[in-house]
Length: 83
Image 1: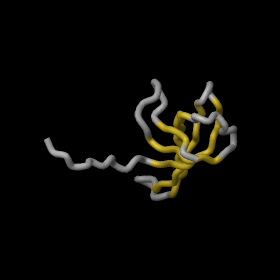
Image 2: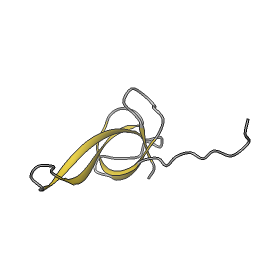
Image 3: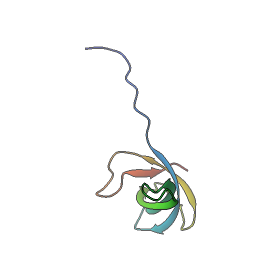
Image 4: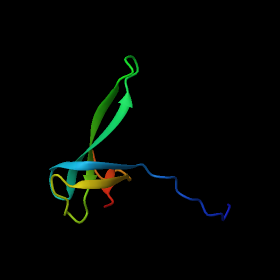
């Protein structure tokens, strides 16, 4: 057995806008990103929704938040609000 300190890998971080409050301590966050279309070469905006855990329960619809990947908290929640 080695006694060396193992460090945790970097977690994914995203910025998005709260689009709905779905229950106690849960919000839905819409994250937008831009990418180049593989065939046409045009820049398109894609969006993805994430369910995030809001421990303080103070995020409101329309707020811009930063979310970080975490362990599974429920069937759909794998993110938590950082700020």
